[in-house]
Length: 114
Image (cartoon, rainbow, N blue to C red; front, side, top):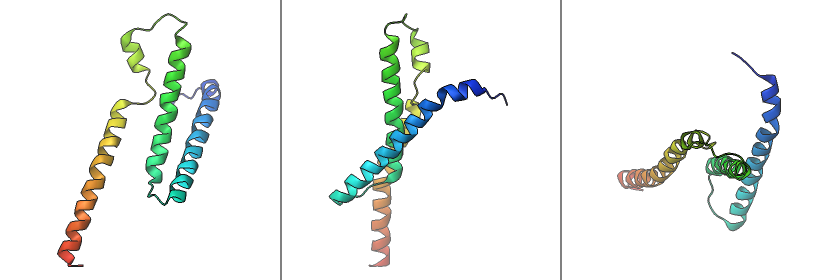
């Protein structure tokens, strides 16, 4: 395995800033939901924080690159930090699991006669 120490050190500030942002979003979301008495999935909060950091970095990089020569469309598509296919899979899973588990719980209560 080829490990580039210079690249790792150069990208470390970006990784740490994204990590801290995700942690603070999780803390703020958890405290806010607790204060309002709302249910909260910490996994959803953490995944949302990671997506948010990725989308912000894409937006910022696009703004900074506006002064340079435009990239070909294929290269712009390849440079997405947030893979849209992963995001669609996660959103689909969230949309399916909530009604599916609600239906399963209702069926178990009905079968069990509780």
